[in-house]
Figure: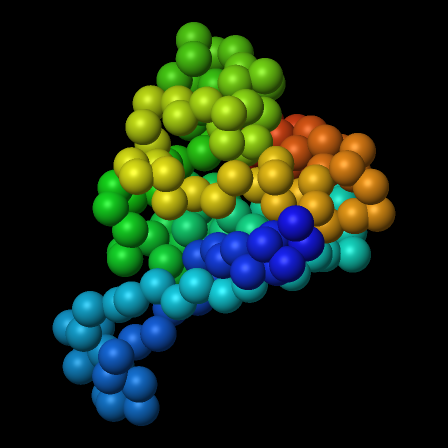
Length: 148
């Protein structure tokens, strides 16, 4: 199972096809998403997890404007609007289910391009319970960044 998890890829970077060419040309060149193996972080703090695993698509502020966003269809959602879109209440369990890959939500991720972080986190060790802690901490951080 570990070898399977080691081969699971996630979206982490962009490769401009016109690398080394002027900025004006690079803006016109379509971007592609490079998939790389997932690596565990030392920290299980929600902010650190978000920065490592989510910001590339959702942006550092969670607004859906990360560097990989332009290459994705549909575009990543603005995570700062979850409470607003749910009558002013943050749906903790629903967000945890989406992170875990248990709930497609409003098909926000189209063809399920968002990795199932719950499975990946559970296989990062030191034990499967650490995956639950990572999902919970990530959900709490997303709750913290809700627009006021």
